[in-house]
Length: 80
Length: 413
Image (tube, rainbow over all chains, first blue to last red; front, top):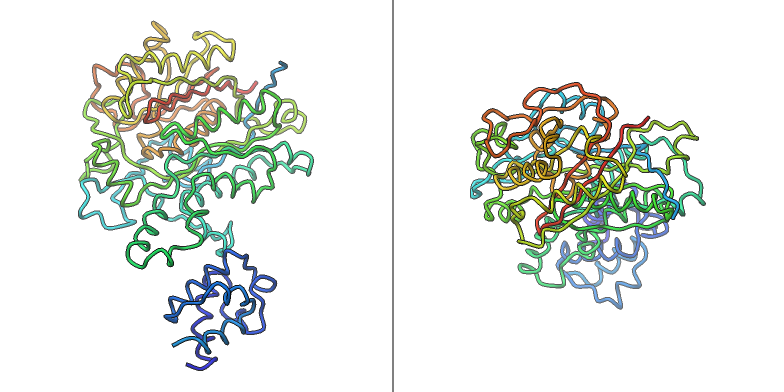
């Protein structure tokens, strides 16, 4: 799965969790500063993505993920 | 202590008969039934298949979807009723006033549906998959918290949990906060969403619910000889309370004045009311004593009136015990005959009804009262509304556990 495909799939989940349009979920966006997430929402999103992509993101890694692009990149590198 | 007067200057409901307070009241006056077959889930395996459901609830005009999906249904009901209530009060509060604005909204059982769903996740997928939103979505105090966040209320916020008496308990405590000078404004009531599999199964198996599955419109029949249990309803009801002089000075619409709050406990059984009714009577008497009036001035009672065999007979006994010969002259009705028993929200919705009844002089009927029960021999306003100018009215709520609460309201003059 390339980054574009990952973004397309992740977009649906992120948009749903934050109650925003899918087109707002762009790689440059910061979850908290740009997309209206709080720390709890970010944990919720990460858990949903873990399930959707069949992977585990350890806490020490998930704490570093702040933007949509970082999330996509992490999944690309560590996902199945 | 210098006691202050307390005005009801806003009302809000989310109910099986809608969320527009005026239409809600009109529908009650016309005796409209809201009990139907349950649509929310498949009831095939359940002995009870009927409820007072809210079919068309839409929170999207009021709350961003990011936030609403973090709220259990009970919390959504409570928040929308509170937003409507605050709009109805037509008041703007500055920062200093918000420091003395409190919220007491209770829920009898809180986020049981959220709880159930996450227990299933725990079993099927393990602890690592339980939602991080689970706790703040499920806990029953979160209704009061969400309302305080939305309205910027910085005074007390709290969540009484006294089963079917929760809403009345909440409003009574809020009334005292203003009466004793501790706050100037309060938003108070109850919210409940228990039409879900785990709650329906629990209430059904304790034999508390009506089994009139083929005739839902006839199932909730308080004080009728053929009543066979209550029907679960859902929704929220809240009042905006305001220190009297402040309400008068801003020329607010005053629905009613709250003048007394009585509380007692049966200390008898976990679900059955103490059969003599003496503690329910003492509960009502305490509300009347707080107001410093006599029983002769009370004209009206919004009864707890659940449609269970024990409740309605015991409540009737309690009214006889307290009012003696005057009992037969009282106008009594049960809102639950039309919308079912909203559990922790019942007292909230019924306080709205009590205030609107005193203001309008229009008393909605108790529907389905077709066959009088010799044990229920008072004037319950059977099947047709009546016009009656009432001076004082009581609203009763009696919860599992023997928690008894009564509010006494006075027609605003």
